[in-house]
Length: 406
Ligand SMILES: *Cc1c(COP(=O)(O)O)cnc(C)c1O
Image 1 (tube, protein in one colour):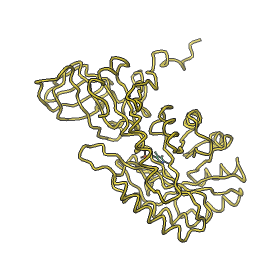
Image 2 (tube, rainbow, N blue to C red; image 1 turned 90 degrees about the horizontal axis):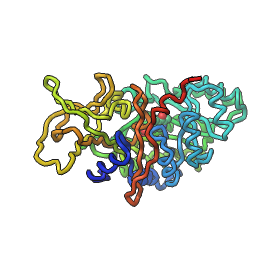
Image 3 (cartoon, rainbow, N blue to C red; image 1 turned 135 degrees about the horizontal axis):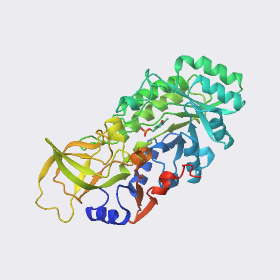
Protein backbone atom coordinates (compact mmCIF):
# COMPACT_ATOMS: atom_id res chain seq x y z
CA UNK A 1 0.00 0.00 0.00
CA UNK A 2 1.27 3.48 -0.83
CA UNK A 3 0.03 5.01 2.45
CA UNK A 4 0.54 3.87 6.03
CA UNK A 5 -2.23 2.49 8.24
CA UNK A 6 -2.07 5.67 10.33
CA UNK A 7 -2.56 7.73 7.21
CA UNK A 8 -5.70 5.70 6.37
CA UNK A 9 -7.22 6.71 9.69
CA UNK A 10 -6.14 10.31 9.20
CA UNK A 11 -7.76 10.45 5.76
CA UNK A 12 -10.92 8.94 7.24
CA UNK A 13 -10.98 11.65 9.92
CA UNK A 14 -10.47 14.37 7.36
CA UNK A 15 -12.65 13.24 4.45
CA UNK A 16 -14.83 10.40 5.72
CA UNK A 17 -15.41 7.06 4.01
CA UNK A 18 -15.98 5.51 1.57
CA UNK A 19 -13.04 7.27 -0.04
CA UNK A 20 -11.05 6.69 -3.21
CA UNK A 21 -7.37 7.52 -2.73
CA UNK A 22 -4.90 7.78 -5.63
CA UNK A 23 -1.13 7.92 -5.79
CA UNK A 24 0.21 10.47 -8.25
CA UNK A 25 3.56 8.72 -8.29
CA UNK A 26 2.14 5.33 -9.32
CA UNK A 27 -0.10 6.98 -11.90
CA UNK A 28 2.87 8.70 -13.54
CA UNK A 29 4.90 5.51 -13.44
CA UNK A 30 2.16 3.58 -15.28
CA UNK A 31 1.89 6.27 -17.96
CA UNK A 32 5.63 5.98 -18.52
CA UNK A 33 5.49 2.17 -18.71
CA UNK A 34 3.13 2.49 -21.64
CA UNK A 35 5.04 5.29 -23.34
CA UNK A 36 8.19 3.16 -23.18
CA UNK A 37 6.60 0.01 -24.54
CA UNK A 38 7.68 0.50 -28.17
CA UNK A 39 10.62 2.93 -28.14
CA UNK A 40 11.55 2.23 -31.76
CA UNK A 41 8.17 2.83 -33.27
CA UNK A 42 6.01 5.80 -34.10
CA UNK A 43 3.55 5.36 -31.23
CA UNK A 44 0.86 7.37 -29.47
CA UNK A 45 -0.76 6.17 -26.27
CA UNK A 46 -4.44 7.03 -25.99
CA UNK A 47 -5.58 6.69 -22.41
CA UNK A 48 -9.06 5.18 -22.47
CA UNK A 49 -10.66 7.67 -20.13
CA UNK A 50 -13.74 5.69 -19.26
CA UNK A 51 -11.67 3.82 -16.65
CA UNK A 52 -11.31 6.98 -14.57
CA UNK A 53 -12.44 10.43 -15.66
CA UNK A 54 -11.43 12.46 -12.65
CA UNK A 55 -10.29 15.86 -13.91
CA UNK A 56 -7.04 15.91 -11.90
CA UNK A 57 -6.17 12.37 -12.98
CA UNK A 58 -6.73 13.41 -16.61
CA UNK A 59 -4.49 16.46 -16.17
CA UNK A 60 -1.64 14.32 -14.86
CA UNK A 61 -2.04 11.88 -17.74
CA UNK A 62 -1.93 14.79 -20.18
CA UNK A 63 1.22 16.12 -18.51
CA UNK A 64 2.79 12.72 -19.07
CA UNK A 65 2.25 13.19 -22.79
CA UNK A 66 -0.59 10.77 -23.43
CA UNK A 67 -3.59 11.38 -25.69
CA UNK A 68 -7.12 10.22 -24.84
CA UNK A 69 -10.06 8.24 -26.13
CA UNK A 70 -13.58 9.42 -25.52
CA UNK A 71 -16.73 7.33 -25.47
CA UNK A 72 -19.30 10.09 -25.14
CA UNK A 73 -19.83 13.86 -25.40
CA UNK A 74 -19.48 13.89 -21.60
CA UNK A 75 -15.99 12.47 -21.78
CA UNK A 76 -15.10 14.90 -24.57
CA UNK A 77 -16.30 17.75 -22.36
CA UNK A 78 -14.15 16.71 -19.40
CA UNK A 79 -11.12 15.98 -21.57
CA UNK A 80 -11.22 19.43 -23.16
CA UNK A 81 -11.57 20.84 -19.65
CA UNK A 82 -8.44 18.89 -18.63
CA UNK A 83 -6.52 20.67 -21.41
CA UNK A 84 -6.40 18.03 -24.13
CA UNK A 85 -6.39 19.54 -27.63
CA UNK A 86 -9.11 18.33 -30.03
CA UNK A 87 -6.47 16.56 -32.12
CA UNK A 88 -5.42 14.57 -29.03
CA UNK A 89 -8.93 13.18 -28.58
CA UNK A 90 -10.30 10.18 -30.47
CA UNK A 91 -14.05 9.72 -30.16
CA UNK A 92 -14.73 5.99 -30.33
CA UNK A 93 -18.45 6.03 -30.92
CA UNK A 94 -20.79 3.11 -30.53
CA UNK A 95 -24.40 3.33 -31.74
CA UNK A 96 -24.63 7.09 -31.41
CA UNK A 97 -27.00 9.62 -32.91
CA UNK A 98 -26.03 11.90 -35.79
CA UNK A 99 -26.18 14.77 -33.27
CA UNK A 100 -23.52 13.10 -31.12
CA UNK A 101 -21.26 12.57 -34.11
CA UNK A 102 -21.75 16.17 -35.05
CA UNK A 103 -20.87 17.23 -31.52
CA UNK A 104 -17.39 15.76 -32.07
CA UNK A 105 -17.06 16.89 -35.71
CA UNK A 106 -17.91 20.49 -34.75
CA UNK A 107 -15.05 20.42 -32.25
CA UNK A 108 -12.56 18.98 -34.78
CA UNK A 109 -12.41 15.70 -32.93
CA UNK A 110 -11.84 12.58 -34.99
CA UNK A 111 -14.74 10.15 -34.92
CA UNK A 112 -14.38 6.39 -35.10
CA UNK A 113 -17.48 4.50 -36.21
CA UNK A 114 -18.45 0.99 -35.31
CA UNK A 115 -20.71 -0.24 -38.14
CA UNK A 116 -21.50 0.24 -41.81
CA UNK A 117 -24.71 2.02 -40.88
CA UNK A 118 -22.86 4.48 -38.65
CA UNK A 119 -20.35 5.07 -41.43
CA UNK A 120 -23.31 5.98 -43.67
CA UNK A 121 -24.58 8.37 -41.02
CA UNK A 122 -21.14 9.96 -40.76
CA UNK A 123 -20.95 10.34 -44.55
CA UNK A 124 -24.32 12.02 -44.68
CA UNK A 125 -23.50 14.64 -42.05
CA UNK A 126 -19.83 15.18 -42.93
CA UNK A 127 -19.17 14.37 -46.61
CA UNK A 128 -15.51 14.80 -47.55
CA UNK A 129 -14.47 14.38 -43.89
CA UNK A 130 -11.93 12.24 -42.06
CA UNK A 131 -13.14 9.20 -40.18
CA UNK A 132 -11.90 6.01 -38.53
CA UNK A 133 -13.52 2.60 -38.58
CA UNK A 134 -13.43 0.01 -35.83
CA UNK A 135 -12.90 -3.52 -37.07
CA UNK A 136 -13.53 -6.80 -35.37
CA UNK A 137 -10.77 -9.20 -36.43
CA UNK A 138 -12.72 -12.19 -35.14
CA UNK A 139 -10.47 -12.72 -32.10
CA UNK A 140 -11.43 -11.68 -28.57
CA UNK A 141 -9.97 -11.95 -25.07
CA UNK A 142 -10.82 -10.91 -21.55
CA UNK A 143 -11.35 -11.78 -17.91
CA UNK A 144 -15.13 -12.19 -18.22
CA UNK A 145 -17.59 -12.77 -21.03
CA UNK A 146 -18.89 -9.24 -20.50
CA UNK A 147 -15.54 -7.60 -21.31
CA UNK A 148 -14.61 -9.56 -24.45
CA UNK A 149 -15.09 -6.93 -27.11
CA UNK A 150 -14.14 -8.65 -30.33
CA UNK A 151 -14.71 -12.09 -31.79
CA UNK A 152 -17.89 -13.62 -33.05
CA UNK A 153 -20.18 -12.89 -30.10
CA UNK A 154 -20.02 -9.17 -29.45
CA UNK A 155 -21.73 -6.06 -30.72
CA UNK A 156 -18.43 -4.33 -31.52
CA UNK A 157 -16.64 -3.56 -34.76
CA UNK A 158 -17.10 -4.23 -38.44
CA UNK A 159 -16.20 -7.74 -39.55
CA UNK A 160 -13.43 -7.94 -42.10
CA UNK A 161 -15.67 -9.53 -44.73
CA UNK A 162 -17.31 -6.11 -45.06
CA UNK A 163 -14.15 -4.30 -46.19
CA UNK A 164 -15.56 -3.85 -49.75
CA UNK A 165 -18.70 -2.24 -48.29
CA UNK A 166 -16.55 0.06 -46.14
CA UNK A 167 -14.59 1.12 -49.21
CA UNK A 168 -17.79 1.73 -51.14
CA UNK A 169 -19.24 4.01 -48.45
CA UNK A 170 -15.93 5.90 -48.13
CA UNK A 171 -16.01 6.51 -51.85
CA UNK A 172 -19.69 7.41 -51.96
CA UNK A 173 -19.17 10.26 -49.49
CA UNK A 174 -15.60 11.08 -50.50
CA UNK A 175 -14.38 10.27 -46.98
CA UNK A 176 -10.75 9.87 -45.94
CA UNK A 177 -10.10 6.86 -43.76
CA UNK A 178 -7.64 8.36 -41.26
CA UNK A 179 -7.23 5.19 -39.28
CA UNK A 180 -8.64 1.91 -38.17
CA UNK A 181 -9.04 0.67 -34.62
CA UNK A 182 -9.85 -2.43 -32.68
CA UNK A 183 -10.15 -3.45 -29.05
CA UNK A 184 -10.23 -7.17 -28.43
CA UNK A 185 -11.12 -7.07 -24.76
CA UNK A 186 -10.09 -6.20 -21.26
CA UNK A 187 -7.54 -7.58 -18.88
CA UNK A 188 -5.03 -9.95 -20.30
CA UNK A 189 -1.90 -10.76 -18.31
CA UNK A 190 -0.37 -12.81 -21.08
CA UNK A 191 0.54 -10.68 -24.07
CA UNK A 192 -0.08 -13.48 -26.57
CA UNK A 193 -3.76 -12.70 -27.12
CA UNK A 194 -2.85 -9.08 -27.84
CA UNK A 195 -0.08 -9.93 -30.29
CA UNK A 196 -2.34 -12.44 -32.07
CA UNK A 197 -5.09 -9.82 -32.20
CA UNK A 198 -2.67 -7.28 -33.66
CA UNK A 199 -1.45 -9.74 -36.29
CA UNK A 200 -4.91 -10.39 -37.63
CA UNK A 201 -5.75 -6.70 -37.36
CA UNK A 202 -2.74 -5.82 -39.52
CA UNK A 203 -4.18 -8.06 -42.23
CA UNK A 204 -7.09 -5.61 -42.32
CA UNK A 205 -4.74 -2.61 -42.31
CA UNK A 206 -3.05 -3.90 -45.48
CA UNK A 207 -6.34 -3.38 -47.30
CA UNK A 208 -6.04 0.37 -46.67
CA UNK A 209 -2.60 1.52 -47.90
CA UNK A 210 -2.70 5.17 -46.82
CA UNK A 211 -3.79 5.09 -43.17
CA UNK A 212 -2.38 7.75 -40.87
CA UNK A 213 -2.82 5.53 -37.84
CA UNK A 214 -3.47 1.97 -36.79
CA UNK A 215 -4.99 1.72 -33.33
CA UNK A 216 -4.41 -1.66 -31.71
CA UNK A 217 -6.68 -1.17 -28.70
CA UNK A 218 -6.27 -1.59 -24.96
CA UNK A 219 -6.93 -4.35 -22.47
CA UNK A 220 -3.54 -4.50 -20.73
CA UNK A 221 -4.16 -6.30 -17.46
CA UNK A 222 -3.05 -5.73 -13.90
CA UNK A 223 -2.59 -8.42 -11.24
CA UNK A 224 -5.73 -8.17 -9.10
CA UNK A 225 -4.73 -11.28 -7.16
CA UNK A 226 -1.55 -11.42 -5.12
CA UNK A 227 -0.44 -14.62 -6.82
CA UNK A 228 -0.85 -13.23 -10.34
CA UNK A 229 2.21 -12.10 -12.24
CA UNK A 230 2.13 -8.65 -13.81
CA UNK A 231 2.12 -8.39 -17.56
CA UNK A 232 5.65 -8.84 -18.94
CA UNK A 233 5.93 -5.54 -20.78
CA UNK A 234 9.46 -6.16 -22.04
CA UNK A 235 8.40 -9.37 -23.70
CA UNK A 236 5.20 -7.86 -25.07
CA UNK A 237 7.12 -4.83 -26.37
CA UNK A 238 9.70 -7.04 -28.12
CA UNK A 239 7.07 -9.24 -29.74
CA UNK A 240 4.96 -6.31 -30.86
CA UNK A 241 7.97 -4.46 -32.18
CA UNK A 242 8.85 -7.41 -34.35
CA UNK A 243 5.32 -7.82 -35.70
CA UNK A 244 5.12 -4.11 -36.50
CA UNK A 245 8.57 -4.05 -38.14
CA UNK A 246 7.55 -6.90 -40.42
CA UNK A 247 4.37 -5.07 -41.27
CA UNK A 248 6.19 -1.82 -42.04
CA UNK A 249 8.48 -3.55 -44.54
CA UNK A 250 5.50 -3.88 -46.86
CA UNK A 251 3.23 -1.06 -45.80
CA UNK A 252 3.37 1.99 -48.11
CA UNK A 253 2.95 4.70 -45.44
CA UNK A 254 6.14 4.36 -43.39
CA UNK A 255 5.04 7.22 -41.14
CA UNK A 256 1.91 5.45 -39.98
CA UNK A 257 1.32 5.98 -36.25
CA UNK A 258 0.57 2.99 -34.05
CA UNK A 259 -1.84 3.75 -31.25
CA UNK A 260 -2.66 1.81 -28.12
CA UNK A 261 -5.55 2.44 -25.76
CA UNK A 262 -4.76 1.31 -22.23
CA UNK A 263 -7.39 2.22 -19.66
CA UNK A 264 -7.12 -0.06 -16.69
CA UNK A 265 -3.34 -0.39 -16.89
CA UNK A 266 -2.88 3.35 -16.42
CA UNK A 267 -5.15 3.87 -13.42
CA UNK A 268 -6.02 0.58 -11.65
CA UNK A 269 -2.98 0.25 -9.44
CA UNK A 270 -2.73 3.89 -8.39
CA UNK A 271 -6.09 3.69 -6.60
CA UNK A 272 -7.32 2.19 -3.34
CA UNK A 273 -10.74 2.37 -1.76
CA UNK A 274 -11.06 3.00 1.98
CA UNK A 275 -14.11 2.01 4.00
CA UNK A 276 -15.19 1.64 7.60
CA UNK A 277 -16.38 -1.45 9.47
CA UNK A 278 -19.78 -0.68 10.98
CA UNK A 279 -20.83 -4.14 12.08
CA UNK A 280 -19.50 -7.63 12.51
CA UNK A 281 -21.93 -10.51 12.76
CA UNK A 282 -22.44 -14.22 12.46
CA UNK A 283 -25.33 -15.36 10.30
CA UNK A 284 -25.62 -19.13 10.68
CA UNK A 285 -22.18 -20.37 9.60
CA UNK A 286 -20.84 -17.18 8.06
CA UNK A 287 -19.09 -14.17 9.49
CA UNK A 288 -20.04 -10.91 7.80
CA UNK A 289 -18.01 -7.75 8.05
CA UNK A 290 -20.49 -4.97 7.33
CA UNK A 291 -18.94 -1.86 5.77
CA UNK A 292 -19.85 1.31 3.91
CA UNK A 293 -18.43 -0.10 0.65
CA UNK A 294 -21.63 -1.07 -1.11
CA UNK A 295 -21.74 -1.95 -4.79
CA UNK A 296 -22.84 1.57 -5.53
CA UNK A 297 -19.23 2.50 -4.64
CA UNK A 298 -17.37 -0.40 -6.31
CA UNK A 299 -19.48 -2.54 -8.61
CA UNK A 300 -16.81 -4.73 -10.23
CA UNK A 301 -17.14 -7.70 -7.84
CA UNK A 302 -20.91 -7.82 -8.38
CA UNK A 303 -20.87 -7.05 -12.08
CA UNK A 304 -17.97 -9.23 -13.26
CA UNK A 305 -17.28 -11.53 -10.28
CA UNK A 306 -14.04 -9.58 -10.01
CA UNK A 307 -11.51 -10.13 -7.30
CA UNK A 308 -10.02 -7.26 -5.32
CA UNK A 309 -7.44 -7.92 -2.64
CA UNK A 310 -8.68 -6.51 0.65
CA UNK A 311 -7.21 -5.74 4.04
CA UNK A 312 -8.58 -4.97 7.47
CA UNK A 313 -6.76 -2.17 9.24
CA UNK A 314 -7.06 -2.36 12.99
CA UNK A 315 -7.60 0.63 15.17
CA UNK A 316 -4.71 1.17 17.55
CA UNK A 317 -2.04 -1.56 17.57
CA UNK A 318 -4.51 -4.27 16.55
CA UNK A 319 -2.80 -6.79 18.80
CA UNK A 320 -4.07 -10.19 19.83
CA UNK A 321 -6.98 -10.53 17.46
CA UNK A 322 -6.27 -13.65 15.39
CA UNK A 323 -7.69 -14.49 12.01
CA UNK A 324 -10.96 -15.82 10.66
CA UNK A 325 -12.71 -16.44 7.38
CA UNK A 326 -15.18 -13.67 6.69
CA UNK A 327 -17.20 -12.08 3.91
CA UNK A 328 -17.01 -8.32 3.47
CA UNK A 329 -20.34 -6.79 2.51
CA UNK A 330 -21.73 -3.30 1.98
CA UNK A 331 -24.78 -1.36 3.08
CA UNK A 332 -26.99 -1.83 0.00
CA UNK A 333 -30.25 -3.71 0.27
CA UNK A 334 -29.27 -6.60 -2.03
CA UNK A 335 -27.98 -10.07 -1.20
CA UNK A 336 -25.40 -9.71 -3.95
CA UNK A 337 -23.83 -6.72 -2.21
CA UNK A 338 -20.53 -8.50 -1.59
CA UNK A 339 -17.09 -6.93 -1.88
CA UNK A 340 -15.03 -10.00 -0.96
CA UNK A 341 -16.29 -13.49 -0.16
CA UNK A 342 -14.80 -15.98 2.30
CA UNK A 343 -11.47 -14.27 2.85
CA UNK A 344 -8.98 -15.09 5.57
CA UNK A 345 -8.68 -11.81 7.46
CA UNK A 346 -7.74 -10.46 10.87
CA UNK A 347 -10.76 -10.57 13.16
CA UNK A 348 -12.55 -7.30 12.53
CA UNK A 349 -14.22 -4.98 15.01
CA UNK A 350 -16.48 -2.00 14.61
CA UNK A 351 -14.35 1.05 13.85
CA UNK A 352 -11.67 -0.83 11.94
CA UNK A 353 -11.03 0.16 8.37
CA UNK A 354 -11.21 -1.90 5.21
CA UNK A 355 -9.12 -1.32 2.10
CA UNK A 356 -9.82 -2.61 -1.41
CA UNK A 357 -6.75 -2.54 -3.63
CA UNK A 358 -6.36 -1.81 -7.34
CA UNK A 359 -9.53 0.22 -7.30
CA UNK A 360 -8.41 3.08 -9.56
CA UNK A 361 -9.99 1.71 -12.76
CA UNK A 362 -13.73 1.23 -13.23
CA UNK A 363 -14.19 2.12 -9.56
CA UNK A 364 -15.50 5.63 -9.12
CA UNK A 365 -16.28 5.67 -12.85
CA UNK A 366 -18.94 2.98 -12.39
CA UNK A 367 -20.26 4.20 -9.04
CA UNK A 368 -23.88 5.18 -8.70
CA UNK A 369 -26.49 6.65 -6.39
CA UNK A 370 -28.38 3.37 -5.99
CA UNK A 371 -30.29 3.30 -2.70
CA UNK A 372 -29.87 7.10 -2.82
CA UNK A 373 -26.37 6.64 -1.49
CA UNK A 374 -23.91 9.45 -2.02
CA UNK A 375 -21.07 8.73 -4.40
CA UNK A 376 -17.75 8.93 -2.55
CA UNK A 377 -15.07 11.59 -2.48
CA UNK A 378 -11.67 11.21 -4.18
CA UNK A 379 -8.29 12.24 -2.80
CA UNK A 380 -4.92 12.46 -4.51
CA UNK A 381 -1.65 11.82 -2.68
CA UNK A 382 0.83 14.01 -4.53
CA UNK A 383 4.51 13.34 -5.09
CA UNK A 384 5.38 14.97 -1.78
CA UNK A 385 2.98 12.73 0.11
CA UNK A 386 0.39 15.47 0.67
CA UNK A 387 -3.29 14.68 0.34
CA UNK A 388 -5.62 16.83 -1.74
CA UNK A 389 -9.35 16.49 -2.32
CA UNK A 390 -9.96 16.06 -6.06
CA UNK A 391 -13.68 15.38 -5.97
CA UNK A 392 -16.21 16.23 -3.29
CA UNK A 393 -18.55 13.61 -1.94
CA UNK A 394 -22.12 13.89 -3.25
CA UNK A 395 -24.50 15.76 -1.01
CA UNK A 396 -28.17 15.22 -0.27
CA UNK A 397 -28.81 18.30 -2.41
CA UNK A 398 -26.93 16.82 -5.36
CA UNK A 399 -29.20 13.78 -5.16
CA UNK A 400 -32.27 15.90 -5.84
CA UNK A 401 -30.85 18.56 -8.14
CA UNK A 402 -32.66 17.26 -11.23
CA UNK A 403 -36.10 17.04 -9.67
CA UNK A 404 -38.73 19.50 -10.80
CA UNK A 405 -39.83 21.05 -7.55
CA UNK A 406 -41.62 24.18 -8.76
C1 LIG B 1 -12.60 0.19 -22.58
C2 LIG B 1 -11.82 0.35 -23.83
C3 LIG B 1 -10.43 0.39 -23.78
C4 LIG B 1 -9.64 0.22 -22.51
O1 LIG B 1 -9.78 -1.06 -21.96
P1 LIG B 1 -8.87 -1.46 -20.73
O2 LIG B 1 -9.18 -2.89 -20.50
O3 LIG B 1 -9.27 -0.62 -19.59
O4 LIG B 1 -7.46 -1.24 -21.13
C5 LIG B 1 -9.75 0.61 -24.97
N1 LIG B 1 -10.41 0.76 -26.13
C6 LIG B 1 -11.74 0.73 -26.22
C7 LIG B 1 -12.39 0.93 -27.52
C8 LIG B 1 -12.50 0.51 -25.07
O5 LIG B 1 -13.83 0.47 -25.15
